[in-house]
Image 1: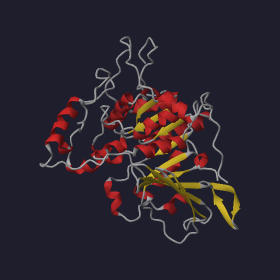
Image 2: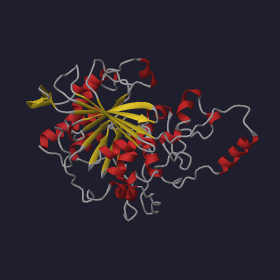
Image 3: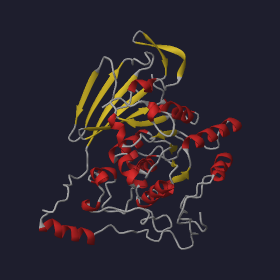
Length: 402
């Protein structure tokens, strides 16, 4: 049977999830004038990262408290036995598939859950010269009602760092498809000055999926190893006590911090400019030296680069194609920090490979008359509407109980 989820150490763990999310979704109030200015750039200095891993101190990217007086379609092959359970609702439908064994490892049981979410994005039609006069008048009205920036003077606001699109005709051809789904990524895109760079448009996790993963990964301390423009980190901040968001791109990290600021959760996220594999190896060495880290890491969320939209050109996506290092190596360096790992992967990933990532059991167990020598892995397909977007593999205590 899957291992039970570790008990939370937080005093707030007894509150309901809806209440915690309500408390954590409150907007940040403007910081007082006495707060010392925070540098508007994130410097990639190896000594700062080393200093964090040795002394247990994070880079100075946390906002000061207002009360403070100082500046602070998967590719699984082979026949499997499938049991289907359908639960119909007004908007959502949940299909649960369970397979006994995989071909890659007959000792590991994969549990597969399919989630359908309401899409929640508009059906924006492409701009054309035949746009009606009513729509043209609507554009002028929309421009007058452009989102206001409550943090225009805040050192973390970077509204001029990348171009923000508000009109379909101004969007580059290669990202128009993603711009038409902007409310799927950030439902408040039209109300708040949220930002994405060209890579962020196609790499951000859809909002309903990010919310679902955050609910499954709720804990005290979580690492978002490849935070990008902050889609997942923002949702983790609503269900977890502390979020450590890491990325090796300074522009994307600043955008993540900017978006978290305007969405009211920046005070619960630590932003670290670092290469995650190097960060994890250094932190694991520190754990070995000290015997136990000063602050435990409960969950690691992995959403590494898939290689751009071209990943869909292959029928079956191997873990070796993940960046910056192959998937097996990335999982191993993460497992040195915690056994509780959520791995967000392309929808056409080779599911059989995921069973080989599970840790080996000390003593084999018998499942339906067959020996199982590895821990359980749960593979969840993430659907938005009628479209399969990705799969998420859960390891350790994140595996759902049967």
